[in-house]
Image (cartoon, rainbow, N blue to C red; front, side, top):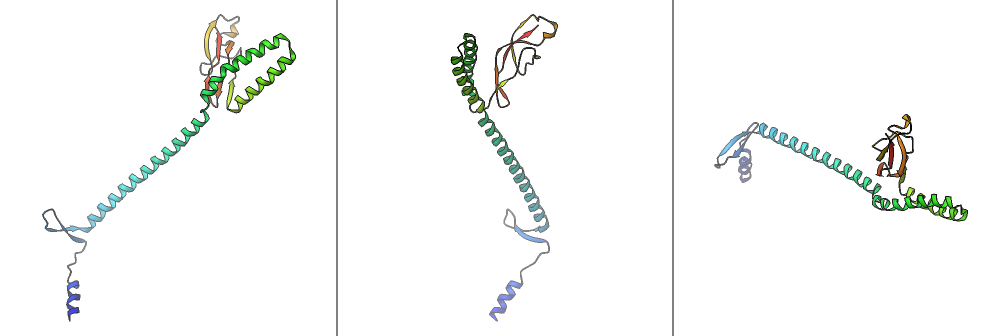
Length: 184
């Protein structure tokens, strides 16, 4: 019989349809609608899912942006070294012009081999010459005008008359603009 009493105790629990008892701030038990609690929990869960998805998307964008910046950094990491070598390349070009005027074929051939090797090494590192020549239309996005002179003909007005210093780019970025003289 003792077991029957225990069973009856458990069977006598009050049941509330869609309602439950909760203790309020004063310790009194209050009946709360269980459906509204579930709706509130679902709403909170939806808000947290939305926050999570937004945070996840923001993190993915951060990773992509960081990877792009890293690739750009690797592409232009040797920019300072190449900029420091450009005056040496300019001196080599001027030396080649003077040696070719001297007429010593062996000297010209030897210096030419070194010049070509130096230029090929810089090209292998991504350095390219910005192609501008006399007669091209002047574009301030690709060349720097250091002076203007009166044009010898109407065709040369606003065009490049002479290239004073060659320009170079590393990848798609111009690291030194060509210095040109334009016709006025």
